[in-house]
Each structure stands twice: as C-alpha cells, then as structure tokens.
Length: 238
Image 1 (cartoon, rainbow, N blue to C red):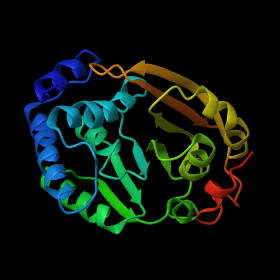
Image 2 (tube, helix red, strand yellow; image 1 turned 180 degrees about the vertical axis):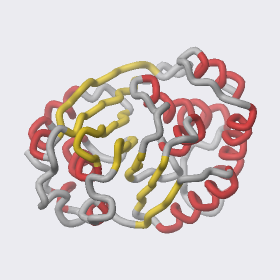
Image 3 (cartoon, rainbow, N blue to C red; image 1 turned 180 degrees about the horizontal axis):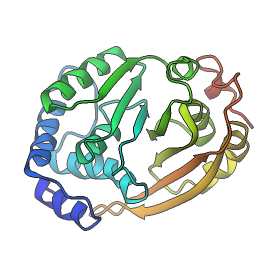
C-alpha cells in the first residue's frame, strides 16, 4: 500500500487529501523511522505497513464520526501520534491536545508537529489519571480518542473524565470488542457515558478485525474519577 492507495481508499470514504496532506504523511513516515532508531516508537517500520496499520487505521475513526467541524480533540496515550496526528492531517481545523506519560515521545511529537507545519496542536507530559483531575482539561474536550491503550473498563476511567457533557469518547480496538464492552458497562455508566454505537470492520489487505466504539457523555463524571495513577488498572470499576 502506497500513499496514492491511501488517497484513493480515503476518497471512497468521502475524505479528500490534497498534495500538501500527502506530503505531510510522507514526511511523517520519514520522521517516524528516523526517530525510531533512537527510541522505541513503533515495531512497524515497513512503509506499506505504516501507511495501512498506522495511517489508514487511525483515520478509520472518521468513517464513523464527523471530524469535519472544528472540534477540540484530546488523544490519551498517543504514543507516536496515533490516531490523532493522521486525523489532524486530514482535518486541519481540529484543535488537538495529546497527553502521554513518556517525555521522549512528547519530544518526538513536538518535533513532528513543527516539521509537518501543524497548528493548534499541543502536547502534555502527564499520566492520564492526573491529567483527568486537572481543572484546566477536565470535561473540556468535544471528543477524546484512545487507540489500543487498555481494556475498556480502564480506558473509560482514563478518558471519559476529559470529555465535556454532550461530547464523545472514541475507543479504537484491534479485535471485536463485545466482551470488553460488556465487562465495562458499569464503568461507562458510573463515569457518565452511554454506548452510542460499536462499529466493526476489517482492515483492508490484511483483513484483520477492527472495532470502533463511540460513547456519548450524557452526565458529568463524579469528582473522584479518575483515581490515583495505577489504580484504574489494578482495580477497574466493576
């Protein structure tokens, strides 16, 4: 899969990429591989695989959610920038905040945003648990994304406190997430969320399963959530 294929496949989904946007994806790949030699950003470095498994896969959230309007988006545990940076490239009007617990990844992302010429992108070195208790960010975002960070019960506690009432939390999962979702029902409800829709599809070419779960924030999250760092993972809400 090449960038021309990415352009064609996204066009089929109603997402048009300009030459400038294709150049941004091209530069993204170059910087990802270059920095990956100095730090562990991704185990996937083959160009075709990065385009499919990182770029296309990240943008797939836009097949089920409308990013065309100017929204504030927070990406929790973005790692090398997935899914938020590919989404931002496709929808430049978005205002993006990325939070990650590893400072060297933040350094990479700051450099990446500068090299790609991205505006309205900010980066925060923090644990999701403490970030979610920060009044400057708590319940401030229209949409919060997370891609394969943790199981749904844990992920909901890390992400839903950041979503404003009436906003959305989008969880991107590798495989069918029905069992995870069932186990997380109580946590989602306690945190003020309600499952709007769970979408399943196959990633093209390699035919691997993907799930995109959209949760609507219907009520404010109780003040005690998220709990202290490490607690959601050790003792999930059940």
